[in-house]
Image (tube, rainbow over all chains, first blue to last red; front, side, top):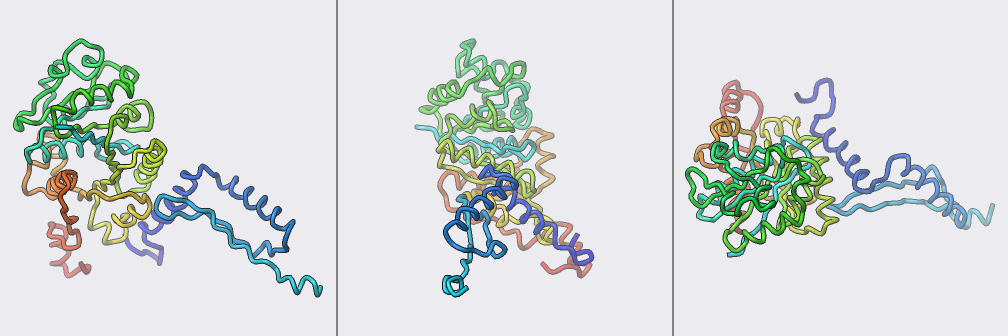
Length: 84
Length: 267
């Protein structure tokens, strides 16, 4: 029942956990495969542009019944690179 | 007549598929439709006891498919509703006694004679499930607001998408409004968000469902039951009527009245 010791309500945990599980079920991508995908993606992109690996966010999201891979990959500024 | 074939499925067992089939069948037939239910769970026959027809079985679906009797002979008429029939599952055979094309052929033979064919799918996503969805015009996925049931329902919806069964609908069964209010149960909206398919109805948890299946008289026949009302509403929606969802906000159950008297929680 409720928020003992400030814990989040159990329905909220259920929803958050299910959101993650369903995305992986639907795409048949394990968390390990997802990590490999991220690493390879970053390697390819770094070959062409300079990126900040720590600022990169790549995740699966769902909208109704469709899944999408969302990648937010900030590029390091070109002028700075030239100057350096 | 050309029957509408509706399969009730879930993935997970024990979420209330059989109860749903029995209640929708009773509600549709009480509204004047001619309905045939088919128990698709070969080897684990159940729909007969829930409907209270277990003592009338002579032939079953495998007898029809293997030519030991005519389709008519395996159709058991309900005790009260003269336009409601059950084709029972075989109890001594296994699911491999029936193929998806057998089910399609059987339903095609029935289609000209009835309004609705309701198929009770077995749990799981294997042969019996494939048999049950093969002839379906529409598949209703039953789930409970609970992590394992929602996950399995999602698997079923994924398979239906892959099979290009476009007409799918969701029934959320055994919702406990008090737990939802306490944020200790997924709400109907949570489940809908997660599964992303059309909602056909919400059935509240109701002890009357157990009492009625003890008696073999589906709760849809009880005018006072909330679950019965929810099933009757779903039946009307299946017939194309625009029936608003039941309101679970205001509760007048005993527990709520006790809470109110105790000056407890807000509604």
